[in-house]
Structures are given as C-alpha cells and as structure tokens.
Image 1: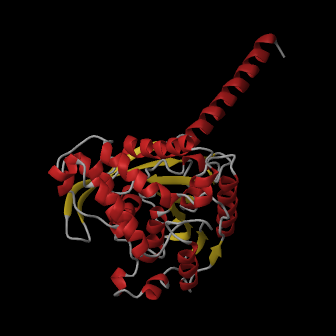
Image 2: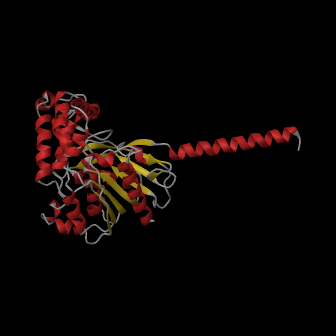
Image 3: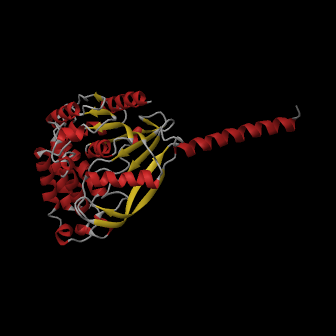
Length: 359
C-alpha cells in the first residue's frame, strides 16, 4: 500500500471515529422546548389561552416509544430535579432510554403567575398538571405510551394521577416519597408556608415580582424542619452549621421562585386528592392503577410519614407493587441526595431493578 493510500485510510478511520463521537454526543445531548396549549380549562374553573408547557429531553426515542421515561417535578422543583440520575450509564440511562422531564404548570419554562397575571393566575391542581403534560406528550411530541412516569414528593402525586387518569399510558410508575392524598398533616404544613408567603408585598398587591424576597426566605424556614429528621438536625455540629443548612435551602427557593408562584404551587399540593373525582372513594381511585408501581418511601420522612405509603401500596389492588423503603435519617429529602451517598445508590439501584422488570 502506498504512503498516500495509507494516509487516506488513517484519515477515513479518524473521520469515522469523529463522526461516531459526534453522533453519541448528539444522542445524549439535551433538547429543551416549550409546547403551547391553545386553550386550557382548569378543573377549578379558570381558563388560560396559549398556555406554555416546558420540557427537556435526553437520549434517543425508540420508534415504538418503548424506552420513553417521563419525569415530573416536586413542588418547588423544576424539570432539572432528576438531572444527577440522567445520563449514560446512570439511573435513567440515556444509552437505553429517552427521557422527557417536564416543568409542571406554575414554574420553570411553563406558564406561571410571574408571566404577568400574578394573583389572577388560575388556581391549579395536580390533575391540571397531568392533563397539560398529557397534551404535551401526545399532541406535542406524538408519544403514544411510556415505559414509566415518575416523580418525587408532589412529583409522585403527579405520577400517581397519571396511573389513574391515563392507566393505559405508562407501563410503570415511580413514586418516591409520595402519597395518595394531602392529609390534614400535609395541609397544615402548606398553610404555614402559604401564610408566610402571603406577607410578601407583591402578593398582597397582586403584582408581578422577580424571584426571591424576604417572605420566600422565611417560608423556607417554615418548611425546612418538616423536610429533615431530628437525627439529621442533631447531627449538625453547631448552630452555625444549622444556619448554613437553612440558608442553603432558602437560597434555592429564592433563586427560582417569587412569592405568588410558590404560593400557587404549594396550594396545588394542598389540593392533592386522587379520590376527589370518585366522590371521595380512595380505594376506587387507586384500584384504577394497572401499571406496575415502585413505591419508595423514607423511614424518617415527616412530610409523608411512611404509613401513608404503606396504606397507598395496599390499596392498589390491580397493580404489581414493589415496596422499597429507604432507611435514612435524612427525612423527606433523602431521595434527592447526590451521587456518592448511600441514599442516591439505593434510589438508583431500586429504580434500575424496577425498570429492568418492565422490559
């Protein structure tokens, strides 16, 4: 072979490798978008035209939609909430799955009070969120069904409603620290949060304001002790460490939320009740779930005590339920721990095993 031919061969090899590398990057790269619902009617009676539903996708979608996983956010979370679990070889493996992570109504790149309506923005509930997500997936993206729909905290509320409203859409549900209803315990927590947010001048005046503000920071301290356990609080070495932990949580809220948008979002969680369309018959509502279900509570959770997950699991009589409690002292937030922690490893392992069982 001549030196010229050898050079061409090497060049072709390099170019092919580069093309393969670029294709791999393109496959895993995220794509962000916003779908517009022309006319949306809320369950509580409000109406919104041109309502936005923001989302991000990762991975390559299978032609038959068999690898689609839909992720929905917690109450104060956005579509990036599960990002540490998304990627090649991770919990939601983009080598195998096509991930659609959605901003629920009221935050992120979806329509929210801060767009201009402020306190005139319609009151919304969990079912409104799910109906908007369904429009995005079916009409906007043309997705016919999903391998799984999952979320944590009020994201689990949404995932459960998916299993009830659209039982034939998901093959599996991922319910991390969720519940079937906002009981009075949860409602009292939300009342404290919303009551504190109502002290914000912009909320009181019905005006649009940027994220942050003193009321948002103070409301975060109302919720913080419900998110963690006494063991976790006592493990902090000093009052300075406690103040730092509280400030970190407040910083997160202040970065993403204004008082009106956050109050409306927590009000949606307070309204959570899958039994409402069934005349209050909770067992009838949960019996509609036919997808396989992973129920992953936390033993030290004070927001949703583990008994709520136990009773919910037993009532889903037509579903194959995998019940996997996480033994952690970190309370409600244990399922959001970063890579390298025992909690992250447990959530990842249980989720991988569950998803593998759906194939």
